[in-house]
Image (cartoon, rainbow, N blue to C red; front, side):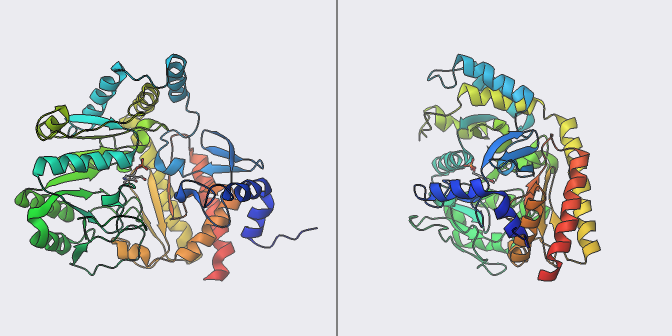
Amino acid sequence: MTIVTSALELYESRTPTSRRLFDEARALIPGGVSRATLAFEPYPFYAAAASGATITDVDGNDYLDLVNNYTSLPHGHGHAATTRAAVEQLSVSSAIGTAHALEADYARELRQRIPAAQRLHFTTTGSEAVAFAVRLARAATGRTRVLKFEGGFHGSHNELYQDIAVLPELSPGAAQPARPASAGLEPTGTITAVYNDLDSVRAAFAQWGQEIAVVVVEPFLGNGALIAAESDFLDVVFECAAAAGALVLFDEIQSLRADYSGAQGRWGYRPDLVALGKIMGGGHALAAFGGRADLFGALEGASPAVLQTGTFTATPMALAAGRAAMAELDRSAYSVLERRTERLREGIRATFAAAGVPVHVNGLGSMFNISITEEEVRSYRAYRAADATLFSALRLEMLVRGVLVMPRGTGCLSTAVTENDVDRVLVALEEGLAAVAGKR
Ligand SMILES: Cc1ncc(COP(=O)(O)O)c(C=O)c1O
């Protein structure tokens, strides 16, 4: 008889088929999975089925899904209206290669939510949406540099795959040429500044202001503990950009989850450009970039012309599914999600307090992030100083209790998550904290 002594052993003993599939895949697919985000130690479990808020793995274990394909599923798995719309469209054609009325229908609905998107183009991924928006900004300004913030993730293209998931290097108030976050990237003209640091923004504009085409900024650092942009920081971003003749691009690819009209609607900002993605596809590959009508003239052949195309851009199936999913995400659905998530955020704080473990919980709308630290997490530096090792142990404890959150401590609720599920998460957390108590 095997005596199970740790969460790691328990996980391994319950997931032998996942281990075998992972080992087999690794011989062909370096890292085991093409999407680096999905790999975690000792190996990810392999999904066999999913329904609502539950994923079932190939060994029959169930997990409450608080990852939701990295925040992109608003309603969990197999949502009835989304599935119906996708299947109906699939029976006609998933991808057509000629114009389709759904495109303008959905564009109209998105503009009603996000007035800054006076004009928009669809893309397949969020990475493309940001890349094309940057291309448009460069064409419009005749400048080349992009300003981004340390820890900010905006997709995998060259200019913005910089200074992500690295230990903070910038000192407060500083800005510098960006460092690539992957081998094989060409040097770019991207500049990195410190998020939520007014002096750093001013320093970047003082040195490169006349060369900056666009500032790319997330309303919260989606990959950095969901640290929210402070209003004086965003005010300085807009002021400096306006004074220097640069544009501001809000990357709302994750933060469309925060509110019906995104963070810009919630906080009353009107960026020149906006990137949308994730939930707007209802689980399908669909994203968009939008912005001021005058900027979008370049996509209609005005000089200088900007080209955008892609074989799987705005497929009718993704448009149909995305529209159906978002139609059920009205203001009241957002407020139910937010209330439920706020109860979870409060519950997490209380559970950590009862266990005597310090925590900082961030999050807006339906998202939460757990950082094990005494410090308030308002800067990327503070987030990276949190105890990631202890969190990994805690995450595994939660996983073997059937609760799935991201390795970086972030999670989100879909509309399929119930109040009972929230209670289950808090029980798993309480037990998990008791199990890791000795590891501090
Ligand atoms: C804020 C933000 N921007 C851009 C992207 C890139 O989107 P995609 O993965 O669809 O290319 C992501 C994806 O996680 C994101 O969170």
